[in-house]
Length: 146
Length: 323
Image (cartoon, rainbow over all chains, first blue to last red; front, side):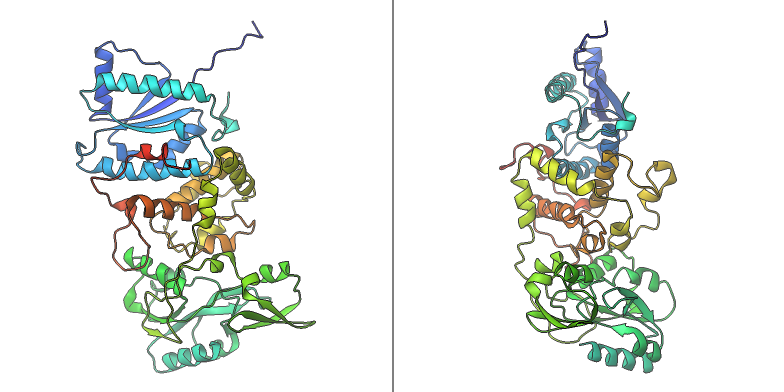
C-alpha cells in the first residue's frame, strides 16, 4: 500500500546507570510492566559517564528523544557521580533550549533499582511526550536518515 | 604607552631578568597585528608595537613558551589577566618562568571595524580617551570609540588586572558591563525565533577552527575535534548537525573555565557571535550555582568540577520563567 501513512513511532535512547536504573528496568521487566518497545536502553557504568557528546550523537544517529536515568542523588554507587551529571545535563539542556531545540526531547530522571514501576511510568510518559513533538528535525543529520 | 613598555622591556632584557619578550608586532598592514616573541633589543626596536589594534590575548602563547628554558616577559591587558589566572589554575603555564607586566586598555578596534566605517588605506593609529585617531594615506580621521570598538570591548567586564608582577599605568575597576543583555534578549524570544537566529549564524561556519585555536581555555594537546575517528576532524561541516554540534561541544568544553575574553568572536572570519554561547553558560552558572568569574582568582574550583547536594534538578530548564 504505497500511500499508507505510517503512524509516527519515535526512537528513544535511554542511558541507564548500571547500578540503579538498569536494575530498575530489569525489575520493570520481571514485574511484567509494559513500556514502549521504542525505548532503546544503553547501559553505562554511571550517569556521569554520559558525555554531552553522547546525547548529541544519539540525536544525530536518528533518536527523537534522549533520556538519562541514574541513581537518586546521594545514592550513587561511586558516591558523587550523579551530582556531576546533574550539573552537566542542566547546562547542556539549557544550551539546547538556547539554540531553539525542543527541550522536551531531553530528560533526566532518577530511578532506583527498586523503582520498576517508576521506570515504566517514566518511559511511558517520555515516549508520549516525544510522540506528541513528532520527528526530531532540529538536531538531525540528513546523512543518517534512512 | 608603547614607549614606556618598550623601555621597560629593554631594561629587563639587558639586566638579564628575562630572556625573551612576548608582545605584538605588525604584519603586512598596521592593523594585521600578530603576537611575537622578541629576543634582542634590536628586534624590539624593529618590531614591537602596542596600539588600538593589539587585541590579541597573549596568555595562551605562554603554554608553549614556558616549556622552553629561560624567563619570558609578557604584557597583559586586564581581560588577558583573567585567562592568565585560569591557565595557572589549570597548571598549564609555569609562573616561575614568567614576568607579567599589566598594561591598561581602553578598548581595541580592528581593521575590519574601521573599514566598515569607510576608512581605508590605514597607516597608523593613536587614541585619546574617547576617540581613535587614524592615519590614512588620505589624511587623518577621528572616530569615536563608541562607534569603532570591538563588540567585546563595548561590554568590557573589567579594567582591573587580577594578576601581574608590575603595572604600567593605572589599574582600573571591575565594570558593570551589561554583557548578558544580548543573551537575555535571545532567551526572551520564542524557541522558533532562537532556532532561526542560530541557524542563520551557525550555518556561516566554515570550520576553520580559529575560535578553538585562539581560545586560551582550549589548551588540550589533543583536541576532540582532531580525532580522525570522530569523522569530523579536519573538514568543513557537512550537515547542519555538525555545525550545531561543533559549537555546542566547544562551548561546553570551556564552560566554567571561559573567562569571557571574547577572542573567539574577534577571530571568527564569518563574524559569528560565538561569545554568546559562552556567555549563556556563564549566565546559567551564575544563576544556578552562584556567581563565578573564571580566572578572578588562582586555584578556584570550576563549577562543572564541583557540586552541592542542593543543586537544582535539570528539569528546571522546562519551567524557568520566560522560556
